Amino acid sequence: VTLKECKKEEKMDREFQKKFKFEGSINVLTQMMVDPAATEKRGGAKNLPLRRGEILDVIQFTNQEQILCRNSQRRYGYVPRAVMLPL
Image (cartoon, rainbow, N blue to C red):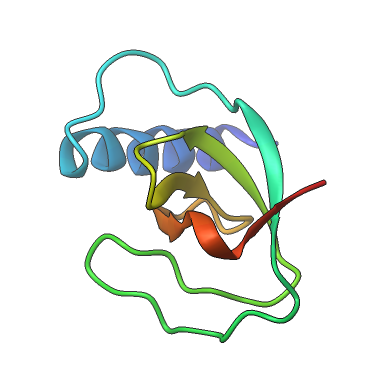
């Protein structure tokens, strides 16, 4: 990992914390997989795009409906709980 990549990741993390009003450090609680049978979605304002079978880092179990996740491109967003499977 280069210094440039680190700076970029830090910037993305800061933007995420601002956008989601997320306090404290970003910790990955677990990893979950998007249900391979789920309908793929493009994502939106605060929602991650859904890709079947994608493994996501779980940052926060937000509520009964959604989970705050990070994908492999280091993008953050909400994912419906209903489409997430434990690994």
